[in-house]
Length: 252
Image (cartoon, rainbow, N blue to C red; front, side, top):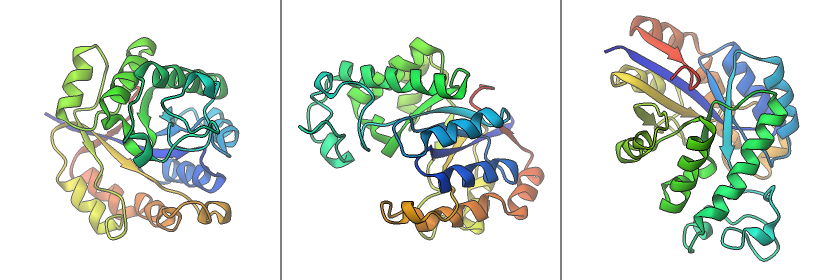
């Protein structure tokens, strides 16, 4: 069996520096797909870039842990604070979650992404990977089933559950390319060499330096390093040598 690889950049729309970095990683590197945050400061900026770049596969980065919802917070009591803002991941995952509330907000975010980019989003995943939670996994899978979008599955159990409901997923999810000491060229070359047969998704977070982001995100300093790695010529050379085919969620 051949080895195929989706390289998905999370957080499209979080900041203009991230948006520019994702576009560079697509045009000059190996990024094939991205997921759009629909409630973030640079959402409209990212959507404009997506409309100008039809080769970039775009999905929705479903958000329940950052900023404010698109839905009236009164309808989302189990997943927002009293002031209507979303909770931190640790706060969200420690409380009972009404799965229908999550699905309601997920539908709103998917609809906004479709409107902004002018085409159907090809796939869905979650900011801060919160769909490890059973209620949020159900909501994400249900949204994918309703819309026909593919979905990120974090492990084999989740993959098989989603596929049993008719939702398309990659065979494997690779989350090792993140955090300090793990986003250099050598780290990525090792990941690529060890890819399993079938279709894998490699999650990444490239970005250009962004002053506004550096004051609100601890990961800001690593995004340019990821960008440099994803556009490094040695990475492209190894992909060719290993006969790895770059692909997208739309092609699943």
